[in-house]
Length: 354
Image 1 (spheres, one colour):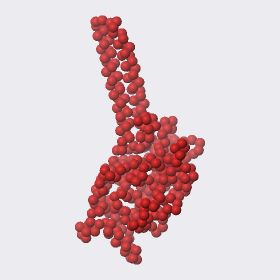
Image 2 (cartoon, rainbow, N blue to C red):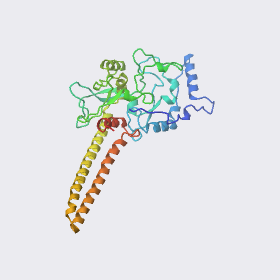
Image 3 (tube, rainbow, N blue to C red):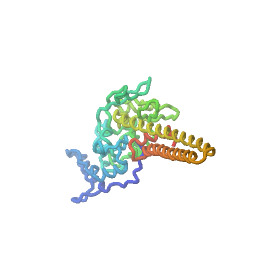
């Protein structure tokens, strides 16, 4: 997950556009619907439609470069995007009687693009932490220690203990002490940290330790969000990070496998660049030694050696360019439009210092 600024992409006008039939916006219609329910009418759920419009999906795709707001996976080639409501529109899990944040169902700042696995609730294989050693991926691609737990945001919107959910328009939502990250509101780097360890090449994400001197640890995911938050506080790591990891399933098997493949690509590119630079240095050194021999030669022998030296220098130059292209490819993988770019940036910060 990486920080995203909404300002470069304008709010789609369809979200507030009135209906031609009566000049009412969807927010006005939803408000009337909820007022009738409050007055005692037996009505079903309001049918929100504006957030599903193609222009909304296009705007979100542009804003997030076709990636899931939570896990940074490309969704276009694999599955349809879920237009996700950060504050759920219909109900709030674990809060009986809450009507959902219905007045935000068509609010641009409340909409995010999500892959199916981050948004929809289902069992996912997830690493089981142990005190003895780091969780690794076996040769068959599975976790060496795993279990299936329910992940996926769905209607979850947990708050810190003692904080109350806003329940109607006008309530102070800023007073809510949120336990879920929104990359357009929050800086995920303050709450999440990627495991970067060349000795254990597996891409796990941890809640950030509150003390930078402390070592990040894999959270033990459980079903109860309050329990996760409490355990995080006791462990002196970010409660928001710990809950977000569990709710969005940021360490589910398929996602960890995909990020680990990126780590392997990074390691390959770096090793190739270093090897190419070493070969280029050897060629340059050889050319320097042979150049010193030119003074003792004459005629055709001198010409042949000069040609060999020039060839070495040309080859060394080409090899250096290939080495630089490999490093440039690494940096391209850290750009916002690339998948898992925050992981790549963490790897670069650890190993390239640039």
